[in-house]
Length: 96
Image (cartoon, rainbow, N blue to C red; front, side, top):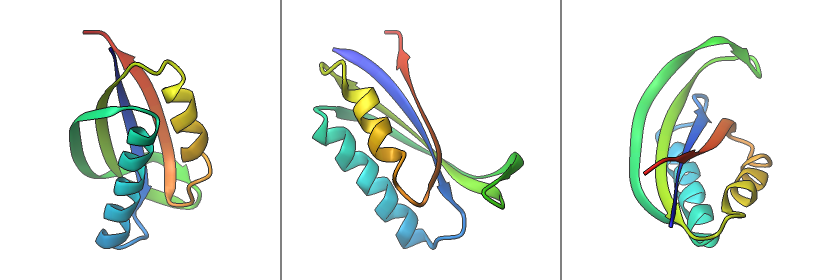
């Protein structure tokens, strides 16, 4: 079982319900690719070092998950790329 951590930055322009919905979509996406979510860390609103898409801050979420599917990270990232309210994302392998 491989361990991964995905960092997702959600737009600060949407309301709390919208952010929750986006986070639920990301969780569903991880489960769709055979992942088991082990931890979700809400880091809250952070200021960016530079403007991204005319925004200066966003909400950070760190999601840790396990999966046997080696194609899961690339598949998840390809779906996150087209999600409108996801500003940035990064998936990394975590050593056990």
